[in-house]
Length: 228
Ligand code: SF4
Image (tube, rainbow, N blue to C red; front, top):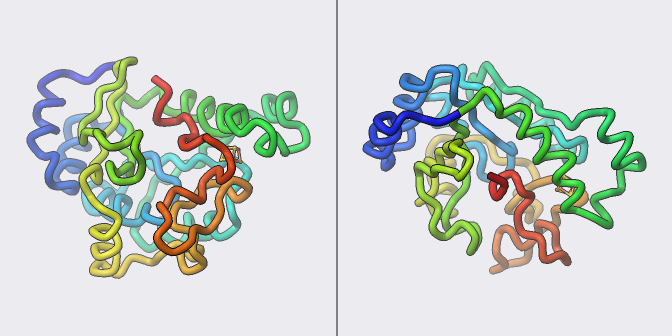
């Protein structure tokens, strides 16, 4: 499913203002756009922008079955606080889990296969109706994201909107505080980038926020943003 070139041009003209960008995207794309959110450490700001622009826009949450209980509670609290009316859990297929991860410990010895099973494949299926997915990725998060455009065309024709691409961690923290957005409860415990429980650790002072993700492995991405 592709997006018309004139729509992409119109979106690029609004890429400096996240709320205007999301409002225009909702208007032009109608039911062809969804948000992807982990309800993690910095998710509240993008979701606040979505709530301001189009509170009924679908928000897809990858319910891997491995999240911290605090994340699941925060998902509910934040949706309520912001007035988001269309948050959807995207889950792995029970049959695939039974066949490929019967003990639930695949993450420990093959995290790529676990992310494929619990994130990539469910998202591929859930995102089929959507030509555009909105993400909260930022250029400063990782070397792999350094050149991230706000309007990103992928090889398969799908488009990702990254309204916060140019925002720094400091910008986000300050704007979250200015808006009075509730923080993820684990941020206070040193978790600055939050994914599934078994694969996320707190980081020390001065460490990169994503240093606690898949610590001890060369893995830096789960695959949902690198797959085409
Ligand atoms: S982050 Fe860890 S537990 Fe979650 S899907 Fe990936 S490997 Fe599995």
